[in-house]
Length: 159
Image (cartoon, rainbow, N blue to C red; front, side):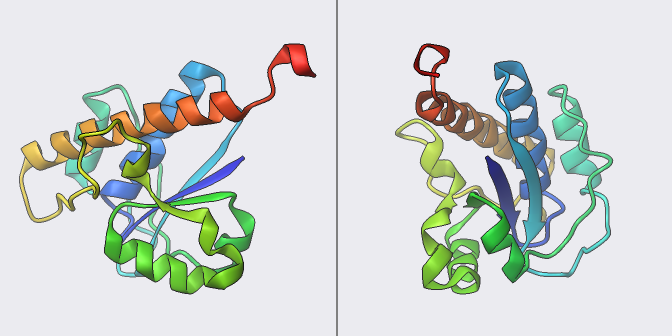
């Protein structure tokens, strides 16, 4: 399973989502390939925002080695699941995916328990509290996604 997390600039939400889901997948023993990208190229090649790195690190997740990149048409073929952080990025990704791959594109918070927000807010123009809030949303959605993947995985008894 190949999963791509996508926000606008790929320096806050999507690298945090990549790091959090990588940690959850490791904890659960899931065999997944994970990456992140942005719908824009504004921060291509840049490390995640220092506040995103600090919020992730405070929760035991190191995203310092990640670098921003722009989502491309080939990603729509290469990934099994493409998870947008908000509705605007969802629409941009659906256009990029075209009719053939549009079904792969979903909102990440669709995997969070009921009652959570629908979109991951962009914390870029806010303070540390915004990054902490985003991290809690991402963790909830990561746990929900991991639950879905475990439910869909063949059990050893069926192999």
